[in-house]
Image (tube, rainbow, N blue to C red):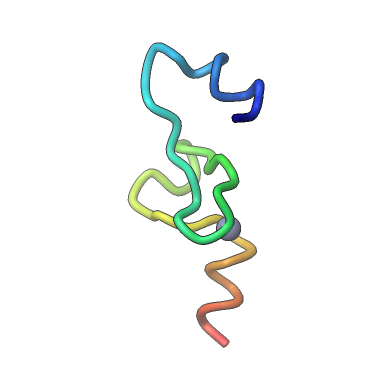
Length: 43
Ligand SMILES: [Zn+2]
C-alpha cells in the first residue's frame, strides 16, 4: 500500500504485525512488532 514497499521489493519488508509499520531489520530482525507496539505490549 505504501510506496516504501516498492523500495524493498527484492525482499519482503518486515512489518509490524500490530500497526503495519515497516520494521528496521537491522534493529529488530527477530521481532514482529515495531518499538512503539513493543513498548505498548510490555505495559
Ligand atoms: Zn507497530
